[in-house]
Length: 258
Image 1: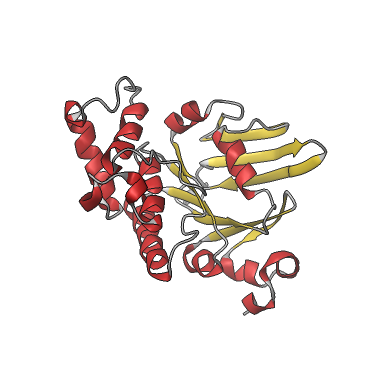
Image 2: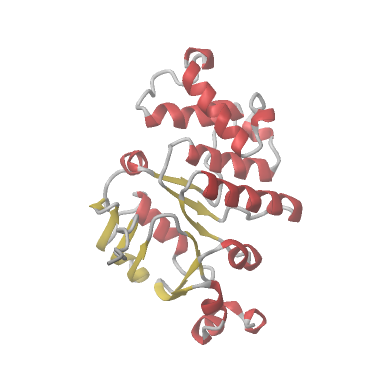
């Protein structure tokens, strides 16, 4: 008899809640992400999407509930400890060192993953293997030609891709991207979406992203989760979400319906 047992989730969120004052920003949210899934979280502004990311990655401590990564509870642990377990994240507003070079930004992540944080910027040549790895990561994001440029001088789209490169340098199993194409031109957006899809396939990652661009969400997601007022309103395939009346009323609008 064929074994149809499903692999355990990479990430599992159980009854996660967070309030600021009397405002419930995340309320009893539960879901599980299987290994290798490419999925999106969508919802109106203020729905709690970034707060949810912050709870998963340790920037915030939940008021209640659990976060499990590969079966281990991680809620309340530090962002550095969580990243070393295998969760990489990019931010809505880039978190790069704008005064440092593109290469140095990625090198910091490579070395911090190995807990080699002393004098990170002293001499890049002192870390030969790490530099080679950093350059390979930059090549994955088509940034190797800009390795010596100051990060703050890059166009917006390149800065966003550098933020993804920094997340990949942690050698994660789960990558979480917060609005990876926000503010990009149509050309930059198309390039970045293609790169995200390529990285996900080639590195066999589990990838979760927040995005407002519905063309991107419905174009590359295997699964979509919808937050509204801190509550998980619905989840399903793109086709299922596009026809969900609650989602349409809360967020998508009639034009999404097929």
